Length: 273
Image (tube, rainbow, N blue to C red; front, top):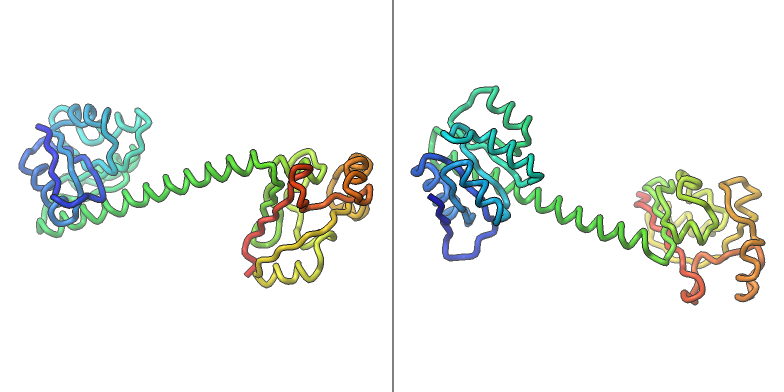
């Protein structure tokens, strides 16, 4: 029997409770709804749970271990084989060590023992569900933000350099490779921002103090090459471009106000504290 138990007010989390004992699954769902505002769908078997999972995305799955048609571990294996990473918590009276080991080896996110004082066990279950589900939501949101940043970073017409907290260059995007005349980020990875002769010394000192700075300067390719800092293009490659802008043949600006001609460069260092 499938049932949804929900209080009148809006639920923060939506979980699936799987247990072949009707009294247990009803009690579990009612406790979560009434005292912890967690909406619960109910499934009396592993097969019923799998059908519900085809059409509904849950914040967590709470499953008994020992059930007639399909054990909680078998249900977990099937779900993970589908590529479903929904947080999975085993809620059972079977406390053998091998059960716990099997649960975590097959991708369970938590384990709660039935028995003992009823309010305490359900409080532990609710806390574990909330903690694990919120952690998963946070990880998902962070992953989405990282994906968005990666898309912007790679395709941006603005040259971007990423440094670690010690001022070591971690990566540059394709626009930056083009701007500074390097073939790939591998050619300059590890370069120290504090060794860059094109950055004014007072700006570097401000960075070391953890200050946020903005500066505009002319990039001297010959200076980089003469100091053997990394392999870059010669000034002659950009001669006609610089002449159009009235700049020296062997210089290239790291920040142009005329972005239609050549995009600016952005350096993003880590904290220097």
